[in-house]
Length: 347
Image 1 (cartoon, one colour):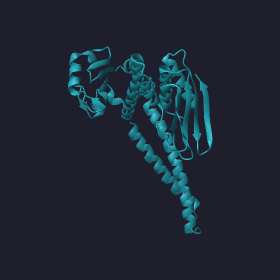
Image 2: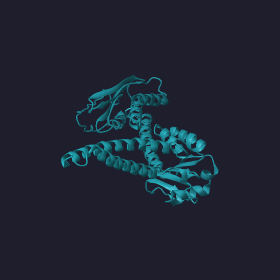
Image 3: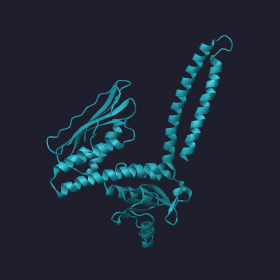
Image 4: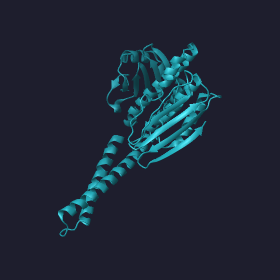
């Protein structure tokens, strides 16, 4: 499993660091002529260099190990599902990801229920999730008041703590229960489950915002409500970044604007800046704006600007707004090297 292999890699890199330090110190420091100060200085410099090298190698190999674990064997099925719901904005998008990855590729059975209304949002077309007894057992074991989180299921549809005895798992979030019945649940790497839970939470929040925008538009002309929801996509407070002063002023000409911006710290020295405008005004512009910002936030490698632009382009085209486009500036400011890498795009 990933955790065990990661610990082994950490201890191995530490052991090699100590070993090289001892050998290098013996080689660089003369045995008799050197003073204590000189010996201490040489040993300190050698140790710092070896420690930095060991840390870099450990991180590099750790990332490769994590990628190898998540995208091979059975765990790759859940990783592919996570990748698809990361850019899902509606229940239809979720259902497509379920059918393609969990049902077709993974041979899993899936059930999504709103426990507050006891409404079945989605169920796979097979016996286990369509059986009345199954539904009654799940309702009895996991009522609407069940705590949020991700849990393993045993063969009797009860919670089990041992993954090796699990025959499925389910996610509980805001009274929505997402059940996945899979006979080989024990083979998934444990690290994947927290990632799956986080992405499901993000998808739920994201789809609720989109649904709320659409509902408000269809039922009323209260554009102030739409504008308030739109502003929720924008940062309320600018992050404090060393060596970088940032401020923003947002005042739309009408209630709902197509302008958007965000500032996302990548690490201590690099920051992502996004500024753009959607053609036109109104609900459609607000929806496209939300799609753009959420897509950028969900990109894992925020320094890969070309991949980010392509992901935004796919997301906008997926909305099928023929008369909507956006122009945007996205750049990475490096306060250490005092450089900025950016792309101007229209799509």
